[in-house]
Image (cartoon, rainbow, N blue to C red):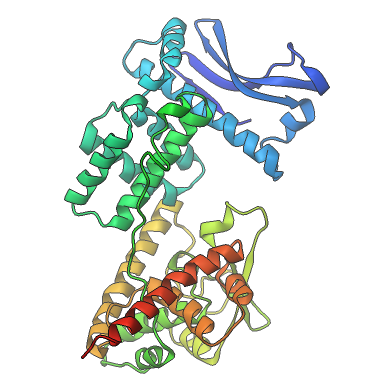
Length: 408
């Protein structure tokens, strides 16, 4: 396992305790804290065979992956407690024991800091940004030492109101609350809070989802966009980029910027969604036929065709994950700004990169295409995800049509 922390003479490591065998050839997995040549061992509640332990770091087995996650949660909790005590100059093994016995007094802030370190080490800059923004919001609301025991349904209600008063949209508030819930879930799985203290769920605090702006365009409206020309090269470029997103199975900008010429195989572009690359057991490759319009966009705005070259040259290959994310965000904002202007001039309304993805799915649905094909084209993990995804568009259409009935 790679779970090991060492600083200021304190070492925290996950180990398999072969000196205390259990039944069926299994051994307990423990977290060992070493300080001044003394050691303390903390249980994770997990027992593994030697073979399972060896396979743990790279396993793709669902059950063993879940065990690894639980062990990671326990490790992060103990590491957070160690770091907090050490930063205050109060560390000792007795102090650590006392802190872990009073687990609800552990700081949410410290747990976020441990998660941020983990995400940074894995190059997960997208998630890192979300966790960082959530932590900063919590600190603005409640300070730099928020105890686990402080997070109650009432606290969560006040926190959501605070974000609302800051001008955050409901979609953003929901993301922040779900991120906080992920940290609270770690504490719950590690046994650091009692079930009665868990603040989320029915009868406690329920996170309200943001409605968002999910307008899907018609084929006719997309045709208007495709033919729009105000004489500006910038408008033409960002219009074409938007059309490419729509035609390439509603591809996300984060995946669009990574497309290389080697991804073109037999007249199709093949790619894996960045969003689900690490979260699904099977690597799900998406294939999009290169239409004449897509080829014209590549010919007009693409780089010199070489297998390893990025098709559109937004990236040059030298970027670290953080710089790559910043370039992606900049391009997304540029496309959205230009397409908002185009939408206003055409009388269509708000158009964004997200509209391209919605429109791809909905145009196919309204044309009678099988939902399984739409699901596969979008790169969704299952049909239920696609059904939920399309349901919001269809309700929006029903709402719009219902309003027509009262225009008298």
